Image: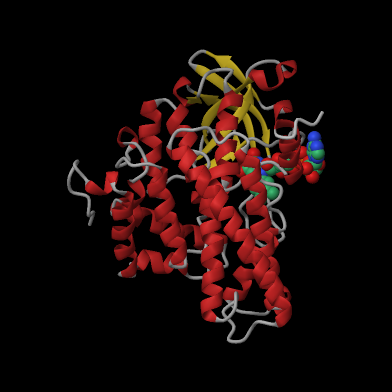
Length: 392
Ligand SMILES: Cc1cc2nc3c(=O)[nH]c(=O)nc-3n(C[C@H](O)[C@H](O)[C@H](O)COP(=O)(O)OP(=O)(O)OC[C@H]3O[C@@H](n4cnc5c(N)ncnc54)[C@H](O)[C@@H]3O)c2cc1C
């Protein structure tokens, strides 16, 4: 039952009151939250539990704050979303799973999508019914994104897309993919790109899961063979795909760190309370103290930097060069937290424990690749070298 009753909703303009009310909802221990907060090893079952949580959060109104009313939200801004995810993580939610794109892609969809299309897809995304994926990288275009070759050719009533994307997170679970495709020539580089929302159920789309070392199937390869896309599915302007991509990446490299760090902080606090990251009764060694100290410091650094990013975003200020610094701090925190986890319980690597241990090991392995997604660590350093230090 929604607590939302009136268009004069006081929680919309009072984010601390919203946070307090949401805390009360969580303290009552709703079943959908309890199910999603358990350690779940199977990606499919984790996805189902997270979908159910998202449905409940939407139906009860909580996840609609922070999104504009014409798009199906209840108003407010990113600070509402920041408070919701922080509380969920503090109470033990281990992952946003495929809903991480709510904080990576959705802000750009809302800012640059056709309003009628956004009003159609944002509520189904928020409610956990339809997920999104991000089709940027290709087998020969990762760091050098401007060299991508997937083509969108104009036809009567839209475009036809042909090409191949790789490392597409959550495509196996998603209904939609935000595809960056070439509408100009290869020589046009970043000026010849357009962003399209492609329905992955269309004929001509094939999604093939990529098995990962940690046993999950987040990543996929997606091929598009003559897939028609209507004009209402263009995000931003024709030929304006680079602007769309930069808008998305500024979230993925900047404000997303807040949401991800909340989960890491929740993981750390939960581990300290229960005795160990994997829930075993005994842990802790003097050798682990240094690693724990490093993790705490790194988490504090990413918290401070990403909070400043949230405030900037709430004030409609550009994140600019703040984004690569925040991304680097997040990578450091992911790694040092998981270094501590493994130091605390090296048996995790043997894979003989319970679900707690299996999920801890999955997270450890994932922390080894975080320096790649959203633009590699080297590329963030490159941006800082050029844009801040003005190195040649
Ligand atoms: C977990 C995960 C999730 C991902 N999810 C998505 C997704 O949802 N959608 C999507 O489109 N992509 C996704 N990616 C892909 C990711 O964005 C690319 O892997 C990344 O941009 C690097 O591209 P690449 O793999 O082609 O490596 P390359 O670009 O080939 O780089 C290889 C190495 O060379 C270095 N390098 C390359 N160019 C330079 C340079 N100019 N200066 C210095 N060093 C350089 C890189 O840092 C890297 O170490 C994901 C990746 C991971 C690991």
